[in-house]
Image 1: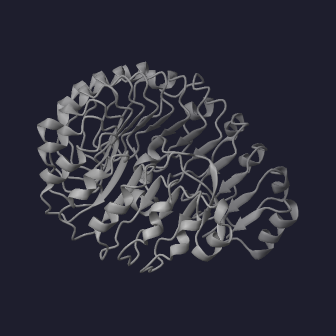
Image 2: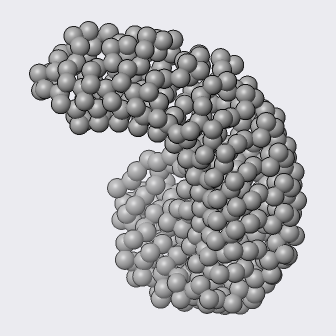
Length: 478
C-alpha cells in the first residue's frame, strides 16, 4: 500500500501540535510538498528505485532484511515503535538516507547502530531512545553530519554528559527532547551554540539554567506543558527567535523584554495565569499569530495597534470587559477569537476597517442579539455565535453578504431564523441544539448550501425531505 500525503508545514499556532507529534511522525519535516509514502516493505521492494519515504512504525519488526539495501533512493525511514535489535550490515549502503527514526526500539544496541550510521554521510536527522535509556555510547559523537536529533530518555538521566556529547556535533541545529518528563535541564545546554530549534514540550521543568542565555541563534523555542511560573527575561535577548510557545504552564507575569523580539512571528501563551500583557508587546512588529486564550486577562494594551502584521488573534476565555478601539484597525487581521468573554462589551473596537477579517468567533458571550459592530465587518466569511442566548438575528445580518459559514448552535431559537435566507453565499449552517420545529418552504434560496446541522431539534422527517428536495446534494446532519 502506498499513500500520497501532504507533509505539514510548521506554521501558525499549529506549531505546538506539530512539534508534539515529532517522534511519531518523524519530527522536523518542513518540506510541505506532495510525496509518496510507502507503509509496507514488500510493496516498497517491488518499486525499489522509486521509494524515498518508507514508514514502518508500529509493525513489530525485529530484523530488517538485507534487501533494504535495494532502496537506493531512500531519504526517510521511520522505524519507531518496533522491536529491532540491530540493523543489517548492508544498511550502510543507504547513502541517500537523510532522516532515520528509531524511537522506542528498546532492545536495540546503540553502539553497534552508531558504528553503522557514521558511514551514512548524508544522514541529517535522527531520533532514538526509550524510557529507560540513561546514557549514550561514545560512538554517538561520530555522527558529525547530524543537524537534528530527537531523544527519548529516562526522566532521571544525568544530562550533563549527554549535552557535552551533543555539543560535539558541529552541525546540530535542532534538538527535540519533548515528553521526557525531565525535572531540570543541565547547564551544559548552553554549549549548543548553533542550536536553532529547541523543543522541551511536555516535561516537568520550572526553570531554565542561566547558561541557556547563550543560545543566541535560536529561531524556535517550545516550552509548552511544563511547570514554569515565570519566564526568564533573557529570552528577550534571543534576537533571532521567530516562534515561542509558552502554553499550558503556570505563568503569571510576562517579562517586558519580550518586546525586544523584533523577528517574532508566532507567540503562544495560552492556558496560563497571565493577568496583564506588557505594553512592550507592541514592539513585536513582525508578529503574525498571538494566542492568549485561557488566561486571566482583563485588558489589552493600546500598543497592540503597532502589530500591523498580526493575522490571527485568540483572546478567548479571559475576563475582558472592554477592548481598545485600536484593535479594530489592525490591517492584516484575518482571524479573531473572542469567545467565552461573557462580560465583554461589544462596542467600539470592531469596525469596517477590518477589511481582511474572515473568521470571527464570539461563542459563549451571552448575546441576546448580534452586536451591531459585528455586522459592519464587510468581508466576513465565518461567524461563530454558538452558545449564546439568541432568539432571533435581525434583518441586518444580510449585510454579511460574503458569509459562508454561520454557527448558531446552542442558542434559543424556537423558529427557523428566516433572515438567514438572505445570506445567499452561505455554505454551512449550524442550528444544532435549538428548538426549531419546521423548515420554511423558501429554504431553496440558499442554493449554495453544502451542509446544514439540525441535531437536537424537534424537526419532522417531512421537513428533512423538504430540504433535500429544495437543495439537491446538501448534506443534512440531524
